[in-house]
Every structure is written in structure tokens, then in C-alpha cells.
Amino acid sequence: MNKLTTAFGAPVPDNQNIQTAGPRGPALLQDVWFLEKLAHFDREVIPERRMHAKGAGAYGTFTVTHDITKYTKASLFSSIGKQTELFVRFSTVAGERGAADAERDIRGFAIKFYTEQGNWDLVGNNTPVFFLRDPLKFPDLNHAIKRDPRSGLRSPNSNWDFWTLLPEALHQVTVVMSDRGIPRSYRHMHGFGSHTFSFINAQNERYWVKFTLKTQQGIANLSDEEATASIGGDRETHLRDLYESIEGKDFPKWKLFVQVMPEKEAATAPYNPFDLTKVWLHKDYPLIEVGVLELNRNPENHFAEVEQAAFNPANIVPGISFSPDKMLQGRLFSYGDAQRYRLGVNHASIPVNAPKCPFHSYHRDGQMRVDGNQGGATPYEPNSYQEWVEQPDFREPPLSIEGAADHWNHRTDDDYFSQPRLLFQLMTPAQQTLLFENTARAIHGASQQVIDRHVANCTACDPAYGAGVSAAIARIHNVK
Ligand code: HEM
View (cartoon, rainbow, N blue to C red):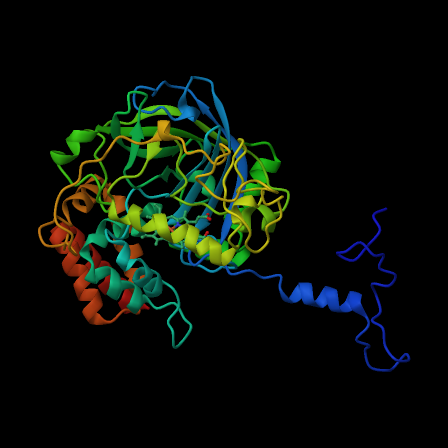
């Protein structure tokens, strides 16, 4: 038997009846257990993530199967067979914490590798590209896809008004409106680091790298109709699928691949390798196999581990680093900042977020400091006591940059359409038809001006894309 106490250890004699003056009298202020219980309850909700609020998480392992040490000295890739513990959180993006899972949306695929040299967070999606190239527009994207400020409803007009005014979004919009726009579950989709990152090897040479995770469960998707039926029966299909498959010991797996570009080649590559709206074509930069990610343990407590998980693209380890991708640069600020608000300044000590290797960081104090706060250790550096000694061996090779500081307009001379065109042309006729029809249903409710602008963007991409969307809109909107 586990006997109930207050949070401070005193026995609770009665958890059924509040204390009152007489059997019918008013409550007494001295009923401190009742006050403690309500006060705690009143504070149980923490802010949800600004996007990616609805999610599911699991623990697992990464096992190296192929040698990539010529590209990176990252300890987790140091030898074949090496295993690293990890935690993954999948998510939908636009919906709130209680939203249904089976919605047309991109999916988050965030991985925290607990390496021997600190946590590496690969905070990716199930798509290789993104809607934007400039982080200044990220809050606008979020406001356009979330609820309308007046009605509180989702607004196809705001959503498509914004997307169509930024034609760089068409590549991502094409993916989201395609047959892959509603994965059947988190297990049945690929994952992508999406940005270009750095690999740094033992000789301190830099390579540019992209990460791809290929599902070993096979790609499986829902049609709009199947998704609507599925949400009617169960709003938590993705969460349930992941939880139950792991409970049933059917452990999902993904193979990790990298694409690698020597540092200097960035200047001559056929596309800007730091543009998040573009992929590196496999024919130019083939996939190199690295290892297997397996999820094999459910969290013990959803709030403690999944809700309080804090992933941050700024969390890198020696051998892996950033790139000049403007979007990545913007993200380096936003996540830690959001987590200091959402979870507090000491969120790194929440067990799911804490490194599993020895660590020795000298931040002090702050709300919810629950470790020893470094006791009496010297609280400043430099000091005469060899405390908090920096580690110059881990300096990165210098990165050459050029050019004057300005708000450079990267939309003047660029190509929005060649990659979505390639994607469109790779689709089978059946997949193209689904793209047209999914688009027509999703854009229903937007103004004629916005619809015309989308058709014009699709036509600029490929006349058959524009014509197909236009015909599907005429057909589907007329019968609605
Ligand atoms: C979550 C900002 C682009 C993937 C978040 C959160 C913020 C944010 C503030 C909530 C963090 C938290 O409260 O823990 C941004 C900004 C972006 C950006 C400013 C662009 C400038 C992207 C891109 C990807 C991505 C390009 C994928 C390639 C995710 C994922 C999560 C997330 C997977 C959820 C992580 C989790 O499961 O806890 N983002 N984001 N974001 N973002 Fe982004």
C-alpha cells in the first residue's frame, strides 16, 4: 500500500471531504491539503509548443552500420556496431496539443542522440524542404496557418494567401498536397534533417551534409477521405500506433543516410546548397548509408518525458556543426528561447533533456534549480583554480565568408520552380491526380484572387500542374 502524503510529506487523513464549519457549513481556510491540491491543479498546464504542439515520443538506439569517419569525427559515428541511446518526438505542426493526428500537414521528426560528447539534436521533419528561406517570415507562416484572430477558425484564405505570395513555398506545398501529405502513422514516413549542416573530420576538414532517415516500415499514407473517417473514430491514431507497436515489441526502424559535399564545392554546386526550399539531387549527391535507428521503449510518463522534451538545433557535438542556411541560423536562437519560456531556464536538467555523459556547465541559479547548483565551486572564470577550463581542441575550422552586411534580397534572381517541376514530373498520373484533388479540397474557402494566384504559380512550374489544379477546383468546388 502506498500511503498518501502532502507534497511536503505530512500524512493526508481525509482525501474525500473538505473541512467545513459543521456538516453544512462553509469551507475553512485552514484545510491546507485542499488548498495545496487545488493550487497545484491550477498550475498543471504549461504553455504548449508554439507549433508542433501535438506529439508522441519514444526511446531507442542508433547503431552504426557503415564507416563515415572520413567525413566526421563525431563520436557516435566512430566505429561500426557502436550504439547510442536516443529519444525521438514526432509531431504534427499546425494543430494544438489536443488536435487530431490524421491531418494534412507536415510532421516533425526530432531526435535527441545522447552521445558521449553531449546531446546532438537533429530537429527535422518528414519532408526534405520547407516553405521558407528566411527566418524573418517564420512567425508569419505560423500566424497564417494557425487560427484566424477574429473567428478562431482555421482560415484557408490566410493560409493560401501567404503561401501563394511566397512562390518559394511551392516545393513544400506540392509535397504537402501530394499523396504523402497525410502519413498513415509516424512509423510510415521518412525523416529529414532538411537543412545543410557541417561535418568536421579528424583532420579538421569541413564537409556540408544533409541527413535522411528512410522508414523500414514502408511509406503508407491516408487519402483525405480515409483521414476524415479515421479522425471520426479516433483523434490519436499516430500516438496510439506508435505506443501500441512499441508495447507489442514491434519496434519501428529507420535507416540513416547522409549526402556529403566538400566545403569548397558549395560555390559551384548547381543550386544554392544552403537554400532550405531545395533538395540536393541524389544523382549529384548520392545517399551514403550510415546506420539504423530503432525505437524500442515507451516513456513512463507522457508529460515528464514527451511534453517536457526540449529539442534544439543549437545542440551539436564535436564533428557536427551548422551551415550558413539562414533558416538554420534563425532556429539557433528560437528553440532555447522558446524553452526558457515554456519550461524554464533550467530545462536542461529535466531528465529527458539532460546529457547522459559527464557534463560541467557553469550556469547558476534560476528558477527550479534542483541539482546542487555546483555547491561551493568557484562561480567565475578566469580563476586561479583550474575550474571551468575551456577546450580549444574543439575549435572548428574557420569558415570563410564574404560580402557587406545588408538585408540581402535572396528573391531577386532565384529559381522557385525547377525543383517542384522535377517533383511533379516524377509523379505517376495517379499521384498527379491526387495532388490536383487534394489541392482543390484544401484551398476551398480561399478568395478567387488567391486561387488564381496559386494556379498561376503551378502553371509557371509546369502548365500541366496549373491545368490539373484548375480543372480539379472547377470540378470539386462546383459540387460542394
Ligand atoms: C518546434 C521555431 C523551422 C522542426 C519549434 C518550436 C519553435 C520553433 C519555437 C517550439 C520549441 C519548443 O517549445 O520546444 C522555428 C523557427 C523556424 C523553424 C523560428 C524557422 C526559422 C523549422 C524547420 C523544421 C522544424 C525548418 C524542420 C526541418 C521543428 C520540430 C519541432 C519544432 C520537429 C518540434 C520539436 C519537438 O518535438 O519538441 N520550432 N522552427 N522547425 N520545429 Fe521549428
